[in-house]
Length: 372
Image: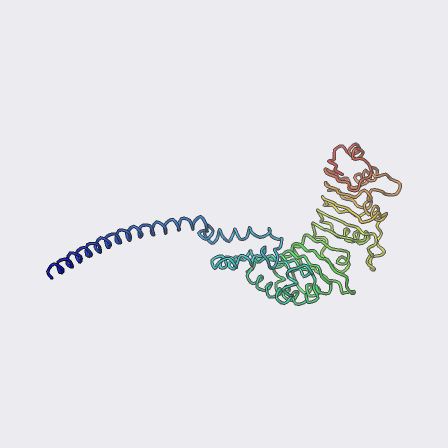
């Protein structure tokens, strides 16, 4: 009996010793594990700095990076999609906060409602709500707006008119009647205006007079006769598919033009009240430096217009050769007569759709850089 009890005590002692050793091993391993966990946390923090560096940048720098993500102002990003500033608000909470607090992200807006447009799929009402949010987020910054027509566009135009005091750049394709409300007040910051009027019933002219900063205008053949502008203050003018007689009327008033692009269309209908305009009378544009002339078809009226222009400050000319086919003169003689009449010192000239060799132009005008 005593032997059995002694054996039990020996076994218990051995088990106690084993437990003690296991505890010692566990303590050592726990200490080692703690050290490894600390090292892991340190490495993870270093890795996060490399993996998510933008989250460690000051908000001001992140905001500037966001601005660079967009097209340069006044170009407009899409209202929705990956290239919209809205996408920056869907990454994380920090980015959303920074994006919503950056007015420059929301100052340029594009609303194009065509069959292929994503905005058509979201609907005019939804697009109008998004646009209202953008304008609010843009603070007091001037706005750049690009707008394409839609049957329900009256809703959006009404929203736009609420912010007319901040319009800086406006490009619109729509019916003339949609813009009648624009003429009812000042647009003090407007610098550039591009209007393409769609086919529409006769509408009252849109008169924009209180636009003191307006300098750049682009019009199509339907916008020209339906809008009245302070032509004398413009420095850059583009007229597309305009009848030559209508061009002459505008050029007579645009005395401060520096850059002018004309795409003439002989089949364009002269404005009824201006059919008595005589193209043959000289039109002087004293400050014009750059002139680009093209026409869709051969036109004696186009050549007659060119022969009526007097541009003493002109240094760059791009012209379709058809403009140089004046009655009784060859193309070289027409150019010589134009330069003599204007007294200009051309430095660059490009003749498009040329039928005679470049050498003929270069021999006639050796001091001018000529391209064909």
